[in-house]
Image 1 (cartoon, helix red, strand yellow):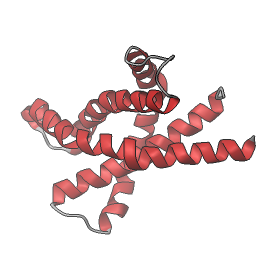
Image 2: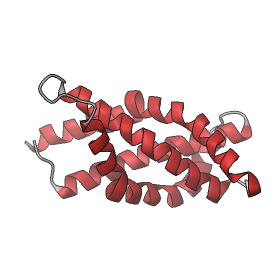
Image 3: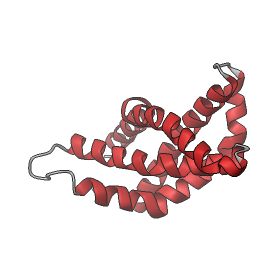
Image 4: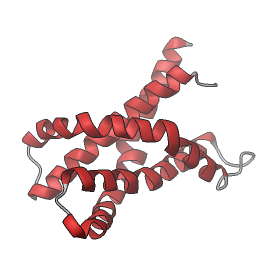
Length: 154
C-alpha cells in the first residue's frame, strides 16, 4: 500500500520522537553514570531541541539516502518486505547516529578543541543503542502501531 505524504510525515515524526527521546535518556544516564526516574523529565528539555532537528534531517535528507543505499543491498524478487524494511532502518541508523551525535556534541557537550574526539566517542557509544532500539524496541513499536492504524483505516 502506497503511503500518502501526510502518513509518511506522521510516521517520521513518531519514529523521530521515540528514537530521540530514548537516545537522550540513554546519553543522560551515561553522563551521570546511572539511570534514575529524573532522567525521563530531564530528557524533555533536550527533546524540544533535538526532535525537530531529527524530523527535518530525516524528512529532507536521510530517508532518501538511506533508501537509496538499502536498495543496493536487497533483491526485490527474493527478499521479503520485512527484510527490506529492516535494511532501510539499518541504513537510517548508520546515517542518523553520527549526525545526531555530532549535533548533540555541539549543543550539549563542552567539547572545546576535542570536538572531533568527543563526537567520535559519542557516536561509538550511541550506535549500538540506536541500532538495537530501532530494530528491536522503539522502531518495532512504531512500525507495529503504524500497521495497526493502517488496518483500522482500511
